[in-house]
Length: 216
Ligand code: DX5
Ligand code: ZN
Image (tube, rainbow, N blue to C red; front, side):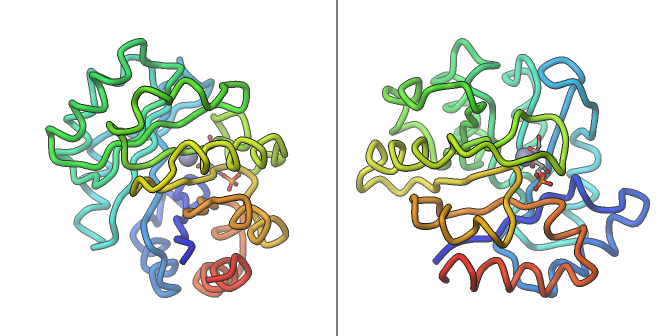
């Protein structure tokens, strides 16, 4: 069964609690929270205080996608703020195994995101240290960008590398109704979608449509 993770980046930040309640009505599996520092990516978004505020408004698992340099400085803060999954970028962390262990020790599930140009092989020796792989199908930094199709062969390759391990394979960027099925067919188990969901007049219905279209 494919999981659906609405990305709140495309929500109305001045009415975040209401937007979360609206999307929750569609039964998503987790909420995706994009954290940007203006250094790893050109944009700035939110920090642990906002995650803490969201935590009080929903029981959905929170998946914090850290698009920040030196993630080891902040991962524990995000777990304490209520993140259930903390995902760091492979490109941001020269000591990836250590930061993944740090996330698990703090009590959360550990994820690694790969930019479109980063090969899957960088994960070969940390597969037993992670719970989620996030394939970026846009260059991170903004919502509403065009899907980059090299994500398809990358998903397939990662699926093979994962084997029987209980690792979620997630895809983020430009996910819409028209590619949901192919992404699932290529091995994605979590679809992250921002503009497709919050840009729709009925976000809850879009969550359901994405899940049905993806085949589960
Ligand atoms: C982009 C973020 C995404 C973003 C996706 O850097 O990581 O999570 O919200 O937005 P859409 O679904 O609009 O491409
Ligand atoms: Zn994201």
